[in-house]
Image 1 (tube, one colour):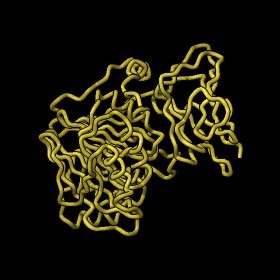
Image 2 (image 1 turned 180 degrees about the vertical axis):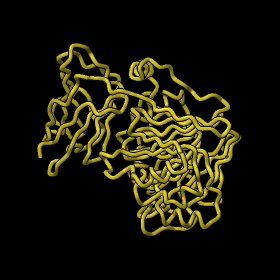
Image 3 (image 1 turned 60 degrees about the vertical axis):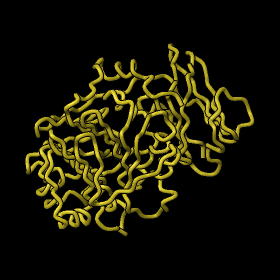
Image 4 (image 1 turned 180 degrees about the horizontal axis):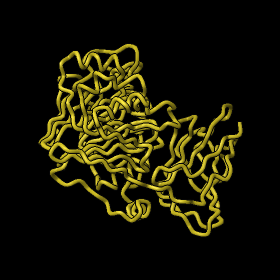
Length: 384
């Protein structure tokens, strides 16, 4: 796989010509990437940067663009709060990439999987390292700051949401509380534990659904800024009006990722958060999925525009099979077509997707084409 930072020049165009804004060495910051209904949160303090959750697999381009924007080429750590697909989905492509990752962390308590098959364990071991399991009372060194694990305190057997890691980053510039997808039962356990939840910035839990962020929790945390990561289209009812009103009642500045093209950036300085909505508009492309040849497992792209398009780091995603193909350095000329075959294809193909039976033969399947920035450019059903 090619290095992800090749898209720098084009990213400048998407961001309206803005220069990349790497964090100042003394600042603490959090960037909640707009990954739809999911979490992918970059957090930095001094020269240390870690990623909390990885969204669905197909938000790859959004995360890489956010890293590029912040000038990040290395991750000190990757933290997985819990095993829901909208939090762990990106682990496979991330572990297969050339991005250096120093350590891999996950909640020590989880349901419906074994330690061997846990997505974080698979990712870490593919890099030749062992996963690190965290629970309440643990801490992780993050530069000169303290990263404390407040939860999980006890094993939840109802929902894995309630086994989420809850992390408090305590820096000289202020405190950031990251809550995964905990719901009210886990909040109650956390409050009863006597943990200090007071923070300057809160990553609101569970996409601000109405089963989280209770009045008691808001009063215990009393953030000055609260960030919600969700998509009302993907998860109707979020963000909950009740949750927003509770946060506004304490005069917290509330921002939602779906209102920002790239995401919500919060910088902390002397205990005061500054919230910035990072804009990113999708570029108009004329490349599309022309046909899906289900029986021969082939996808044909076409360029209906008047300019050649470099497809490097674009990707195809199979909704049914949850598989991804990342394009190498390849250009599709105006008026031309490009055929992508698989290991099951018997006919001719320009490129080979190193997988078998990508297109489902018996059930409805949708193929998506994403550009380098993670925007869906084209989609097509397999005809069933």
